[in-house]
Length: 107
Image (cartoon, rainbow, N blue to C red; front, side, top):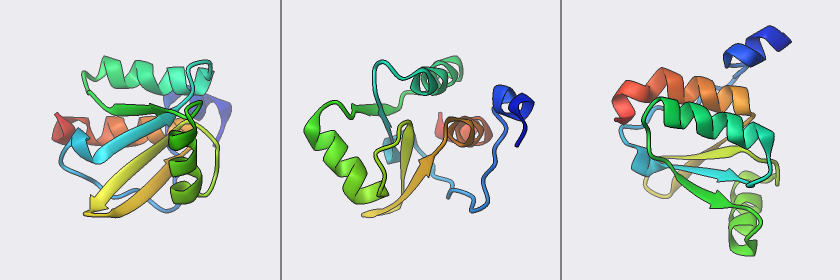
């Protein structure tokens, strides 16, 4: 992916994330000071979506991210595609591409 693709919010996903029907199935793990998280949040706001967020400065949220996704990197979008089954989507460009692609279905 080129830097121009990154700025446009194009995805580099090799293994596409599963589609869900509601923002209730999404949780954004982030940090308040993270510019990549801010980029994702601004696109979510632009699209008029309400996605629950968890600040990984809080130990319980960091633990959930580490045990579920396996990395402490933020932003990370947790997608519950089946009850109790999660897909962990890292990389701000991939998260932005995901929410843009599914925005209509998520409203």
